Image 1 (cartoon, rainbow, N blue to C red):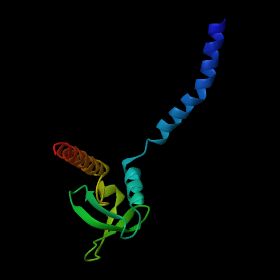
Image 2 (cartoon, rainbow, N blue to C red; image 1 turned 180 degrees about the vertical axis):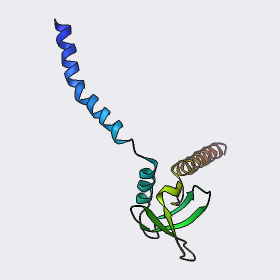
Image 3 (spheres, one colour; image 1 turned 45 degrees about the horizontal axis):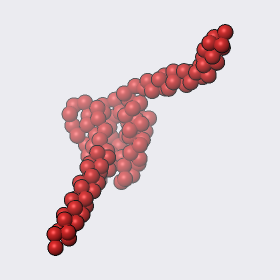
Image 4 (cartoon, one colour; image 1 turned 135 degrees about the horizontal axis):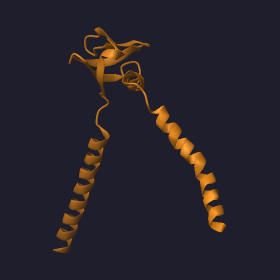
Length: 130
């Protein structure tokens, strides 16, 4: 009888958690167009919203997002300020131009840390040999 009561208690405690995880899977099912809209929205509007947009015909457009609408958005070239209107349906890839990626930053920090450790070991050995 104790085993049954423990199983029943565990079932009652885990039931809300299973509903939570099931709800998260349903929310993540978005269409590719909605994903592209989200990526463009994350870039922001203005000169800080720099990106490289690749369209279905293979053309790449570099610049910043000037305006974002429901069906399309406008990119402007940073140098010439020439506008290009792109429909979300035509976009295959959105690459943000925000500088270093996370992996590159981690590698740079690891390289600096390794250099500091090696320099410390070298100077410690040199100091003990005198």
